[in-house]
Every structure is written in C-alpha cells, then in structure tokens.
Length: 274
Image (tube, rainbow, N blue to C red):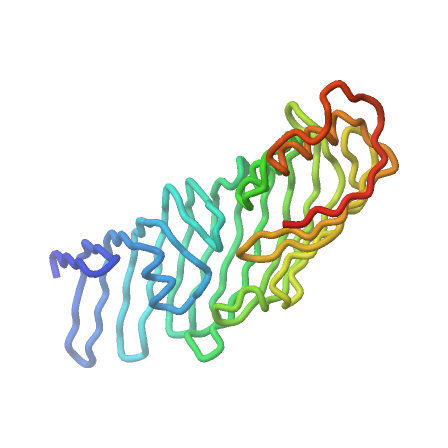
C-alpha cells in the first residue's frame, strides 16, 4: 500500500504500509496523523477536556488479535482540564487494553513539566491515572489560569503530583500534589511547601507548611472548587510587611484595598471567598 490519505472529522492521515490477506488479514501502516484532541477525548470517553491539535508520527498495526497504535506526538498548544500546556512532546501507545501516554516535555505556567497518563480500559469504568512532575512553574502564572489576579508573587515551584479517577468524574477522583516554593524574580517573595489534595469532593484542598511571604510566616488552608475555581481560603500571619499584603490583595481582588501611604507590619486573619 503505497499511500493512504484519510480525512475525517478531526483527523487527517497520510500513511503507507502493507496489507496481508493470508493466513489472516493483517494491516501495518506508518505515517503522519494530525488529530483534534477534542475529538479524541469524546471518542474514547476520556472526559478531561482535551483540546488542541497534535501531530503524531504513527505506526498502526491491525490483526486477528487486536490492534496497536504507537506514536510520537507533538503540539504547540494543548488544553487539559482547563490548563494549557505548550511546546508538548511525548509518546502514546493505544491498544484494546487502553491508553498509555508519556509527556516527555512541555511548558506550563512558565516552567517545564513531564509526566505520564494511563487509561486502563475503554469501559465500563474508564479508569484514569496521571503522574506529573514540574519545575520552574510560576505561581502568579498558575493563579492567573484559575482566574485569580496577579498579586506579584515572586516565586517558582517544583511540583510532584498523582491523580486517579473514573470516567468523566475527575472531581470525584483522589490525588495529591506537593508543591515546593522558592523565591524568584521581582515582587513578593514566597517560599515553603504547599500540599494540594483532591478528596473525591470536587474541590482542591490546600494546606501550607512553613510558608513565608517577604520573610513573614503565613498559614494558608482551604479549598478551590474544580471548574468554577471559586476559592474558600483562610490566610493568616503573625507579621508580614504591609506592602506585600497590599500588593497581593490588590491583585487578587482586582483593585487597591489599602492606602499606598501605609507602611509597617501586618498581622491578619483573612477569609477569601468567591
């Protein structure tokens, strides 16, 4: 088979290969496939809001014992559960047993990410597992993805996360992410550790450990609703420079709340909602 060109909804393929008719029908094709991830998400019932176009240099094998697709994939921009990853490169294996994917590299919120994804079956449970590692992730950039204004947090993070869920009910899944913050750039320096957990209740649970803003210790705990990204946060400190507090509140709320002439140390116990 010298050349096969396929154009369908969300998929364009240009492949060549071999077809054997005896002793049983067997097909082996190789070539370039360009696909719309939204169509893939819907077809396989993945349910994680995939969007974007990918190029896949693929090998496709079909025989009496099933099928297999192996591909090296690349994309300039992909969205997953509302988050955007750019300059993506990875590998995918698809068979009747499910999907295994490796993210070799990608950029997210100004940092580098890598990880893996597994879809253990095509029904009825559609069990998903994700592992993610990242470094140099900008905290202000990440908060902006959630619709939270930039408060000038001068910090970057290393991230290790795992998540598992079934079907399209990612909010009913369970997982944990450990985020380690280090000061970086101009603004309000932040350092410490943040643990974010999903506990099958549709919300991310935040708990800060040894967190400091501009040298002052801060406690931060509460939830962030998936999808709506509405926070219910309690933030308190026995003493943080007032300039740092003023900058963060102005960014998060969208307007200055404190007079610029104020200076000193802030002792606060805040509830942030909506």
